[in-house]
Length: 96
Image 1 (tube, helix red, strand yellow):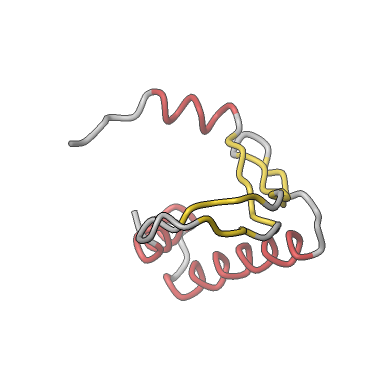
Image 2 (cartoon, helix red, strand yellow):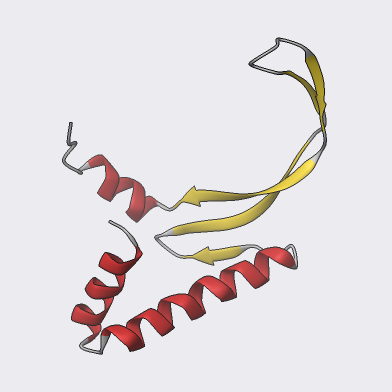
């Protein structure tokens, strides 16, 4: 499912226009993004939790040359699935 398919599903379920659903989705994603920028955690009960995780600096290898290189420490977004989402995924049909 891509963003336009998600917007269409939201519009259908909420009985609103696709434009309104797109605005709502964009607003929700912007809210999550702003919270993560502040270092806050966003919890959607049953769905999951978005947070910011720090990665330590480490030494890696350039896959082309094999040379060692230093990888700087950085902060990355993290998502932990909630129980309802995990249960839904466990019952999902797997396509090949």
